[in-house]
Length: 193
Image (cartoon, rainbow, N blue to C red; front, side):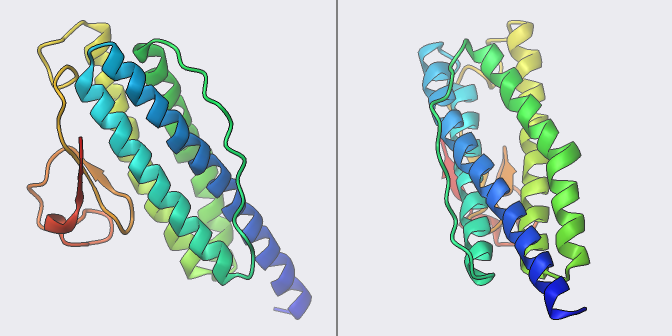
């Protein structure tokens, strides 16, 4: 690989990391206000989920910022005000965003970083992809429960979700031995309520 090809590849990887960083910073801000709305709607379990997902998105952003700096760039983001609707619509928006990242964004970014042999960027993107899959599953479950008015389920009571401080993997229980994504010790995961 020539020096010019390497520089162009590095610029592409930095651009992808920057795009991901911008997205994660906005998503975590949006999830925070969605949590406030869920609390106001009496869906305290959904609020807990939004707070855990917000923490996870912030960890993704931190990992991406670190990778950008390692490549000689500077992480920047413009955080925009979120439009808050009712909690069901907020859940649908969150699920749609997670599915877009799962189906489109992160697979392309992983492929590019892997082709450029940038293991730090590829790992950061892979960790985010795996965490987003869990978020999507939990949002889909919450949507089904809200739609069927199952207020006697986890959506109504504040509860702990567990977030890995390394990869941002998110779990609804802490019974595992290690993080399912990066093998970080489960007892050291952050409990987010």
